[in-house]
Length: 567
Image (cartoon, rainbow, N blue to C red; front, top):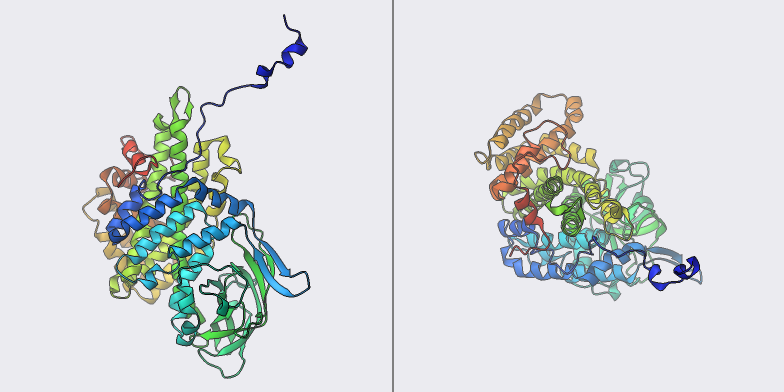
């Protein structure tokens, strides 16, 4: 018989257990072809011509080395050098190479430019599909990509400014060097609106702008003030709101001046955010920074609002993308993990939860793709323009607000390992709380809905018209539409106080009805019936995993299964 000492020194006893009953990393799958909601949305909303292009991009996004870039870009976060070692002001933000690779891929694939360089039917749909998949890999670098994309309508309002920057903004390339624009073939665009004392109330901004010489659109001004949040300070030019004698105005402020000297846009510090860590959000001061007036003095908000609308569209789509990333990983995990004698994926309660999470994503992606189509047609179709004006705010509010609870529930599906920082789940959760706040919090979106309806009641008629296209497809939805439309038609009788007080409740109903209407019209009955019965039929608080008995959970889950190609 061996002694205790001999037993402890036996090599076999170094193996305490075998690693079994665990999942593996989800990778080597096509983010597009395995996603029925996205495939259907692209085909339905006008992007069928881009299917192969999107499929190839989806294959890239699912590669293990590419997915790893998202982890690295968030593990090794940006660092700020305000000065070089000789004492010269440089305001240089250093990023990990993974961040630069993600930026390069996004820009070379036109995620910042495709609808502007090739403006045909479905261009926003195709570009949106690629952007939403890219957000599943890593969300932080999406901030400068979407700002660059969204800047073009505002830039184009001032021909002199467009002539300086547009061709380089639209170029499919990426040059991260801290150099003047003349030294680059491709540039990126940022945006600065928020100040300490004002937040979303940009009319309270204190930054002042005065003409360097002659005043007026396209002329050079000098800015003195600050911005509490300026994301991606390594962009090459920024659209900035500042006060003139006529009120809030919009300026294009470059990081370097045309004569090759550094502009007086000084980065004070990087923000220590809970999420979106790969993206260098910053505080900046303007100490006589020069920029060109875009649009008329005092018309800064209308000038930049189109940019804001497009970034809100990307916020809702990216939040849907975060839902998809979590859902795909959860389905993958439950296929491999067993408990109490059966695979989690085969257990009725887990099926209820997964199917319910899949329905949330189905509605979010249908909404996002419908808004992409509206963007494609809003310049030629009045209905689409009015629908985009109202529904973008509704969708941004709802989808972004649903994402954090969705991300948390995904973590609960995984269990204890779902909160480990070397997994994707904590990053998805942290990212999910960013979009509901950026580009206008929930209250701001709801107030914008009221503002849009009050200014132009026709936008509400367009929204109702879109809902009514689904009438007759589901009796629960029909009942909901009757109730909702009665409320909408009665808005004119409510006091301003009551309108604001009830705004969230109203927009909640508008959002869920809009998603339900889209699913009733376009999704399989297994999806639309379960969505309507779980979200419209009950007045109780809806928690995930409470689908009614008889819901076609297996069919719903299969549509989202990352192991099954849909095309």
